[in-house]
Length: 272
Ligand code: SF4
Ligand code: SF4
Ligand code: SF4
Image 1 (tube, protein in one colour):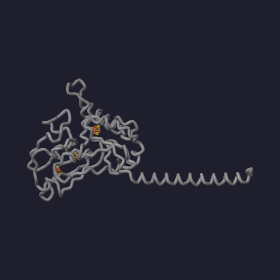
Image 2 (cartoon, rainbow, N blue to C red; image 1 turned 90 degrees about the horizontal axis):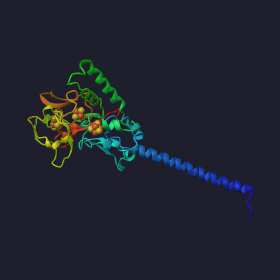
Image 3 (tube, protein in one colour; image 1 turned 135 degrees about the vertical axis):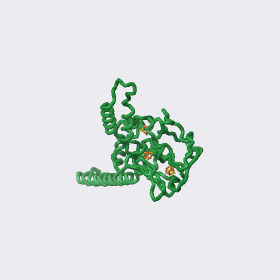
């Protein structure tokens, strides 16, 4: 039996209609899926230095892992599948291994191929620091070293977040001291001490440093930024560490704090 033109048109119409409904369904499912994975992205991951706004970061980061490879202290990890849309993106868990700026040059930022970690602001702050340094230093002086002010300025420019201290568990706030290695025996984190007497060229295990403090102040003395970031303060006759505007959120204080339970967390920067 031949097929009439009317039948073909009807069939065609039904076929096209079915395809259109299927396509619309697929778009709907896709949109819902996107909505879902966007919702389930992990907003709490602490990003490496220089990370752009989280919403942009998710799309700018191509999950190449170059920042992970370049970090000399292995501070950066990649998020896993349970982090939803954030899967494969870099983050730092400072209680495990903080960024102590061991690289001195923001290597993770510099190496990022898509500017998800944006180097431009660091470049600007480094250039400005050299300019200032050159006003008061003579290049023929044997101590002339632009690298020190440059890396200091770049470090201070970091804004990963801000440390928040729980004074209920802080040893200093309870008037307690601390003696020994800061972390549990199995801890493998490293850092480079900022103490000039123990100035190290390279990071060494946190637990190789034995401390003896009548009043705990490790978060203050071991901070790589110094007194523009954290100081020991007194309030109502009680000593307690106080976080200042210069805190970069690097997390060294989080890593080195000997208190159990964990006493310091990094509140992620709103602009990051
Ligand atoms: S800035 Fe910090 S996280 Fe980035 S490479 Fe250097 S030490 Fe590692
Ligand atoms: S290192 Fe921890 S326990 Fe010690 S003063 Fe700082 S926050 Fe308190
Ligand atoms: S207080 Fe210092 S060590 Fe702690 S996060 Fe801020 S800059 Fe880093």
